[in-house]
Structures are given as C-alpha cells and as structure tokens.
Image 1 (cartoon, rainbow, N blue to C red):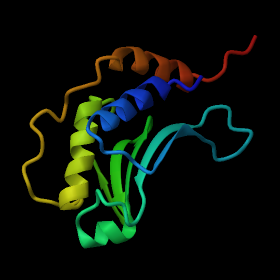
Image 2: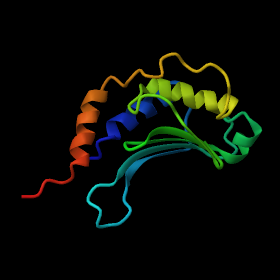
Image 3: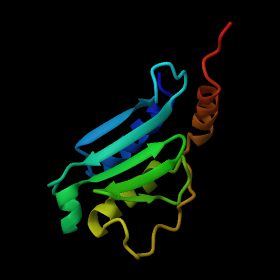
Length: 142
C-alpha cells in the first residue's frame, strides 16, 4: 500500500464534508524511470474547467489543481500559474479544504488574510512521516 493513501482519504473525507468535490482525485507514485526503486509519492485533486465551484473567470476557464508531493509539499495550480502553499507538508485536511475553497472563490494570488493555522498538522502526521521515511529508505534487500 502507498503510505500517503490514509492522508489522501482524510483530505477527500474533508472535501466531502464541505460538499466541495473535485472532478478528479489521484494518489500514486511517479518515477523518472522504471528502474528507479523509489519514486515521488503524490496526491492530486482537480476541479476541471467549467466546474461550478470555480468563481474567478480565469479559473473557471482553466480549472484548479491542488497537489501534494512527499518531496515538495502542497501547491495549487490554475493554468500556468503555480503557487507553493506555505504550510505544513502534512497539513490538517480541513486546512487543505479551506485553502482550496479560498483559491476557487478568490483565485491563487488573493491578498486576503489566510487562515491563522497554516502550521496545524494532520492528527496522523507523525505516523505518516515515519512511513514516508521508511519509503524513502527504499526496499529492503536481503
């Protein structure tokens, strides 16, 4: 099992709880080559162009992607515009939902004051962090 799946499920559950559902939800591993033993773990949430939850004109036309990587943390993208989110790499899922909803309503570069709790971590962050460390150490060979 991919170690980020419980985190992805928690984020999805938080999205469902707010009735803010992405059109596409993906979680997996990216590898530069098939021979690479350890790849980049990711989670990707996408609201496709035309989604009724996307308010700014450009975002409604381009869609919204909220993505996480165990190497780079959280970011949001609309078209060619990418913003790295300054928050915990294992942020609380409710915070991810708040930030995604804020982006959907106000755009990526809104100068509004963000949530005060940007460093709040997911309740299971320590267990996931340990699993990510084991993953990065690569497969055990005998």
